[in-house]
Image 1 (spheres, rainbow, N blue to C red):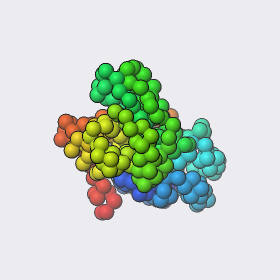
Image 2 (cartoon, helix red, strand yellow; image 1 turned 90 degrees about the vertical axis):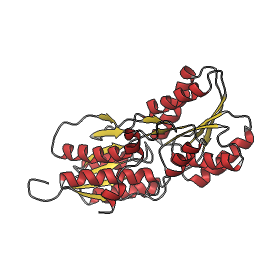
Image 3 (cartoon, rainbow, N blue to C red; image 1 turned 60 degrees about the vertical axis):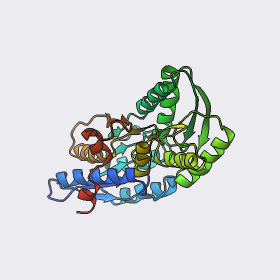
Image 4 (cartoon, rainbow, N blue to C red; image 1 turned 180 degrees about the vertical axis):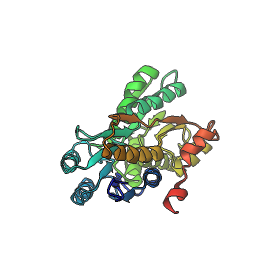
Length: 304
């Protein structure tokens, strides 16, 4: 709460509002808001390719003169100018999830996506010590977080799996599971002899999983994906997914708000905060730390 007794107001703007990942971010932000006695305003575009829509959300909140904005930018370049305009108006901005090409932000709170990609590459190397044909289905141009995962995986593969051969790494799936399914089917038709596949987020992972299921190759081709959605977790349990790199979106939303309010109070905050990532398999799904990570208390914070 501010010195004048008014509640602080923090806008939290995700890349989209459909996927479970963003619901976890929302829940974490709400928890932090309650602890800080601050109002959390949650708004973002429905789809994760609506750059114009997200820019408009940032601009609208800027015009309202809020205390802070916590933003997961859809595009590392397109959102830079709106963020800089908000900061000039005295609004503190914390970037979460995906980096921004600007120095105006107070802090960047996210997974170290490059290292998380390398984590996936290490597992792929363990699966194919004698070599294999590997494919990367990318997400969307301009998404810094996903590009860092993809590049981390490709660089890590050279170190962890030097005998593996990358047969495709230049195809982008788009923002929905439907577009990812089409891209995945095209890739599997073009490259029928593939041993392992990496996808950088939930929609690309689900799209590729469906394509493998439809072609009868799920489980035969080793799929490593990102994020712990229910379909991917179910496929992990049945052996149709070889492993998942799991972030902590709840912590991302929580720390994003906490750091933003600290900046509003004039406190010194770290420029970059790594919220961590963990590789999970069917073998460690029941570990308490993994359970807490993949099943955050969404109802507690979003439905109370």
